[in-house]
Image (tube, rainbow, N blue to C red; front, side):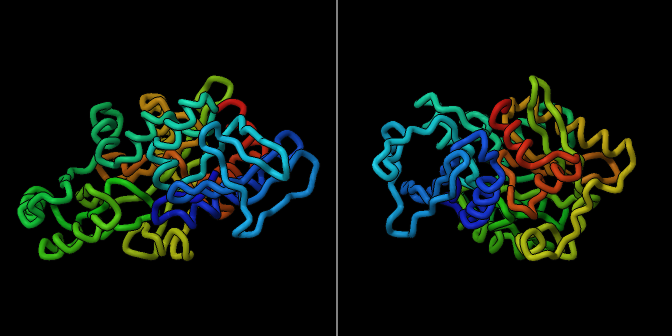
Length: 329
């Protein structure tokens, strides 16, 4: 199930199409659902050992939300598992998970409650800060409708520049600005409000950027090889992520101590949050320790995305990995 109601919907489609192409077609019937703004449509399906059938736009069967089923060529199909690949709401915010939980249909991600916490950068950071297992950058937080100029003045007093202004929901760096001077804060906050009703401003942390993913299999949490992100841009923004302006070294060229720190911290966050499925954690390693950036409960899954790179570096076949998530997540 891919697409979303957010600015990331096209990235989610690419992720969803990649996953659909890698799910074991000998074990599962695979149905691709595009979902955006409440309209859920069947894009394509492939039954075990059969050819893929794709529906043209305008002739896509509508999903019946009363029981999460679809009528396909005269046959009623009730889905029994959902691999969620929605970056942003409703699939990453917990709303879709809540719907599936009420119907008793299993899915590939964290629960609705954990998804909701992790989706909000401020709520998630507050939760993780209290765990005491990783450092968190100093920050300020504001709701739309509050005194933005007063907030900007308070932020300038409290934090050192540069700072990162970001919407608390969403990903792919939409709405994010690196601000170097106090005079630019109000504009950056208003820009971030285009993506959501709350904004987080974080003090910039200088260091090496690492990311690591964890998943559960056989009752235990496993981590994948860590990646170091080296960007040509000022930071790892949308352009760096999707237009080739970054180098993603996998596995990272780092000491055993650093690798252990990143992987063990990832495992602890995954366990303490109560995550499920494959979840990616992002960090900055500064001189005074490892700083938490964010949790991605539905990380990008295109062929060029970070998690598939980690899976390949681990020597795991992508189809086997997805089967593991479906069977054991």
